[in-house]
Image: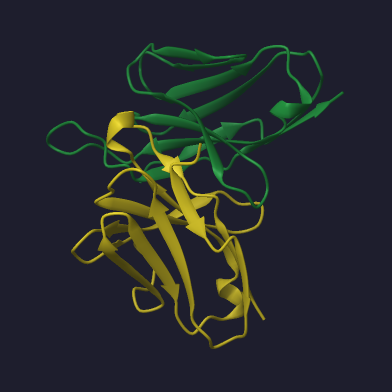
Length: 117
Length: 116
């Protein structure tokens, strides 16, 4: 079964600093999702990557998927206290014959981000 | 705004009782929805795939008789925790994929279940 390893497990930064969270898979990633969660709350969709070498950005967050499709990174520029939370990477378990992902995700263990003002 | 709605947000019940959690797709029809469970300070684990009009598909190790899933309409899937015990206390959350959002998956707000 596919396993996702996230690093670091926790991260404490000062407001304004840049940071990177990594997500490494033991197998090829068919679809890699990044979500943000606060304890006891739902997941907020951030980005989804599918192609090797793909990079997407939204506001101050950039996500990349390497060419081999086994590693992804999430980079936050000029972090703010509002960025604090748990960041989860999730990988789809595969695709059907038509190439559409199943939608069943395996998640990494999460990275707890704290941003001090 | 939210595209997947979940209810209730939290529930407390006595051991031995059953609890039903609802997951609704808003403004779209979802033939498939997914149910996850999250224990404190742990990641999400896929429990089952809810299929409209047919039986749910359960992941290995998930008890079908304990976690009953019903997907009776294209906008509603329900998860019933039967004869709940304290070890069933967890955060349950569902997801669905709006057809107009490509392969993006959206999650509900989750349900915190506490069994006394």
